[in-house]
Length: 91
Image (cartoon, rainbow, N blue to C red):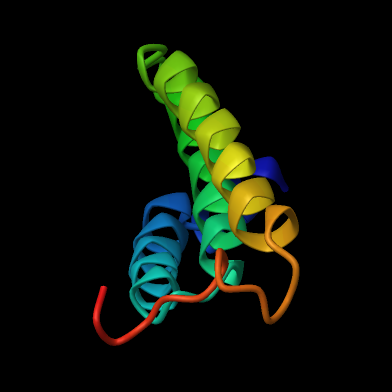
């Protein structure tokens, strides 16, 4: 059963899709991109454990912390409609 589940869930393809989706969302300046990127980093940590490539784990845990900080900064620090949170055409 575990082998069947392993063959059905290809984490490398899931990570590929999440990488592309996260990049598109962040390119559109949507905060949801940080969430997608954090989920992708968690998937890469699982890949690192499964393949015994343990160097992926601390790097991606650091990325998850960075994504959380960026999400908090983008989403919660500037009140809606304030000049601080808006990007203007002349900047």
